[in-house]
Image (cartoon, rainbow, N blue to C red; front, side, top):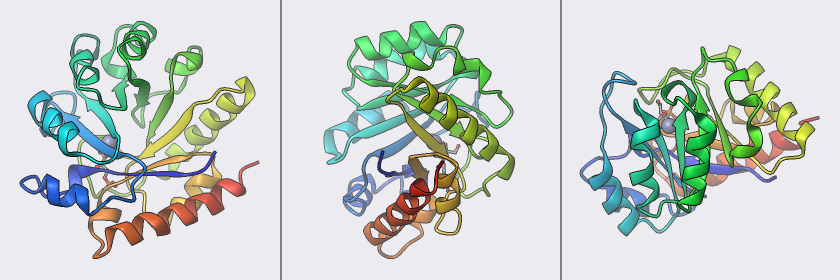
Length: 223
Ligand code: DX5
Ligand code: ZN
């Protein structure tokens, strides 16, 4: 599996999405953080904004829902035609049923766990997902430092996916930068969200390529 880089538009200029999307044309996908001000203490945007993003984006959209009541709220995002929709295990009553409905509606289904949530919440149902997101910071804000203790969970997820021979992307989100991406990849992550590390660069496409090279080096070190 080769490394994918998903810049998070949480670090973009919210009144210049079209310009900022153009500046990350080398991204594998664009990571869209939807926050409801309740599941996390921050508020971003909802359906009308993501609809416009889907209309103007040249790259696939990877929607990360940090919202309550995911079972009721997730499907309208899928119906916009985005590539993937990831919901939080903590916000769903039935992760299997929701993943099946997301897939049936035409998107890849992702499930996310916060730093304090054990992977066991999703391990038994891994085959139901296209993507597992291990949060490496507390969700809510960009620009935080990676929580080192979450890397054990990355390794645990990578082993479980390999053991079952599943074709699932293992995503990490939060505090990923040039200094740590190789190490995180060596734990088995293959899909990297990066907000401030990409948008803080003068040459964002070059930063994406640099991150990808380092991540692929790390992936080659996984056992
Ligand atoms: C945090 C979001 C992230 C965030 C990452 O809750 O889910 O996607 O934008 O930003 P950085 O890479 O700056 O930590
Ligand atoms: Zn995110």
